[in-house]
Length: 116
Image 1 (tube, helix red, strand yellow):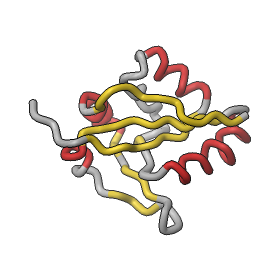
Image 2 (cartoon, rainbow, N blue to C red):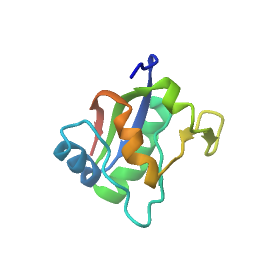
Image 3 (tube, one colour):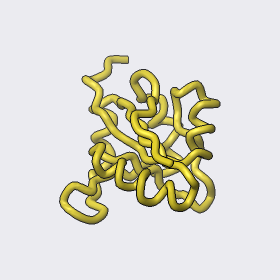
Image 4 (cartoon, rainbow, N blue to C red):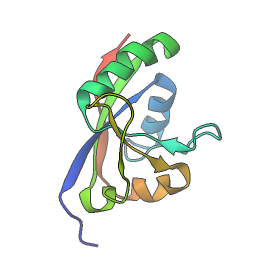
C-alpha cells in the first residue's frame, strides 16, 4: 500500500484513555464508548492544550496532549469541522470507522504535554 506524506494531529485526553492507548502499545486509539459516537482529533496543538489543561484537569485530575500522524490522503476523507473559534478545528471520525483510521496511523502516538 502506498501512503501519502503523513499529517500531524493532536488529541487532548484524560488518564483513562491514555492508559488504554498505552495498552495498545501507543499504536492505536481505543474503541469509543457507546456515548462517544465520534472520535475528535484536533488540527492544532494550541487547541489541544486548552482542552487538556482547562477541561481534562478539571474533570479527570490530569490532562495530556498527544501527537500522532496519519496518512494524509486517508485523513482527507474526514471533513474539517470548526467547533468554535477560527482555530478550533477537528476531524470527526465516526466510531465505527476508528479501526480503519487506526490502520492508517504512521508511527506511534506520543505524549507531548501533561497537566495536573
